[in-house]
Image (cartoon, rainbow, N blue to C red; front, side, top):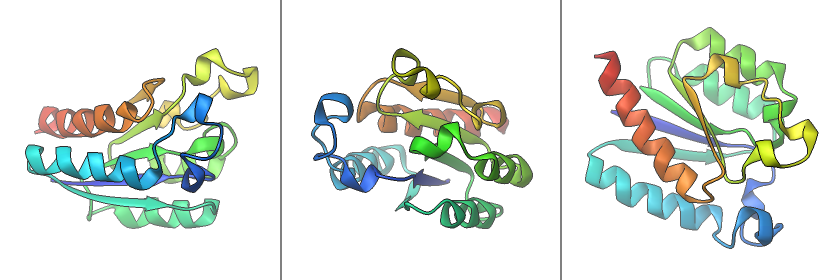
Length: 146
């Protein structure tokens, strides 16, 4: 099983950007933990980050036929990107939305996710563990579809 982790804008600044909200772990630290769990679960992961909406759209489109599940932290694009929503809907690859912070307990503009309606589910508010929960959910989603 192959799982694609996509990370949106500003996630490259984890560990230094608002640590009281996003935690002190870097994206590289989170990736290391995800890879350790993936090895235990006997699945393959590809981890990517971009600040560019079009690059994320391209990776989503390219995932069809190459990945079994996508786990995406679209960051700010969660609330603004019809392009990401349409790409996820178009390819038919099960997708799980994740967030480090509880977006529903934050500013009102963060309460609406444009991608949630085309995702299998949403994991939010568990800090870096949201990624590990996302990995487990990806395995579970794929196993359930068999």
